[in-house]
Structures are given as structure tokens and as C-alpha cells.
View 1 (spheres, rainbow, N blue to C red):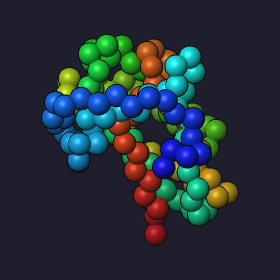
View 2: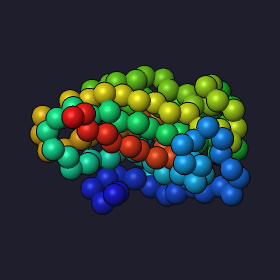
View 3: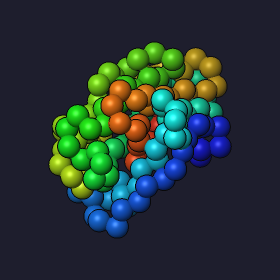
View 4: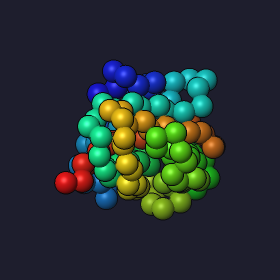
Length: 131
């Protein structure tokens, strides 16, 4: 849910996106609010170890070439992946996934997708608890 998060508008395409576990999810992207430098999510979770999977559909014609949308990913207020560029990994109407492990010691998983170039955006977020 986006209820405890700083997120902006949703962009949707009717074109099928290849390489996504669920194509319909990759056909949408949540963008940072206009004028803000990041998407900021705060998820209530139990303390423990998690894998966070971020799915990025390359669906926006303004950001479908390498270098047009580059983001830094922060988890728990720490940089975890700098310079992620989905379009450099896959083509237009394809999906790229970034998986990161994180330890949560409080009741909140904090995720920021920060602007380097272009508007920060993400199609889907999975949070998987390690047992």
C-alpha cells in the first residue's frame, strides 16, 4: 500500500511488457511526485531479513533509452545500488528486476528510489521475508 509513502502519479501503457513475472504490473509505473527527488516508501514489517525485488518496466517513451532514467536505490537510509538504469539492461516494453537483501531491526522497511537522471519510477515492489 502507498498509504505511508511519498509517491506521485501512475503511468500506464496498454502494450504488453516482456520479461515481467506478471506483465500487467510492468505495464504501470509509479513516479515520484513532480518536483521531488525520490519515490519514498515506508512499509510496516516485522524485524527480520528480507529480499526486496524492484520491477522496472521500460514503458515511457521519454525514458526508454540508456541514460534517460537512472536511479539510486536506498534501503534503511543506506545506499544499496547506485546508478541503476533499467533501459541499459533491457529494451523498450521489457522489464528489469533488481533484488536486494536487507535486515530490518525496527518495524519499518524504508525504501527510496532517488533521481540521478530523469524521473524516478518503479513498476512493482515485492518484499519477501527470509524464514
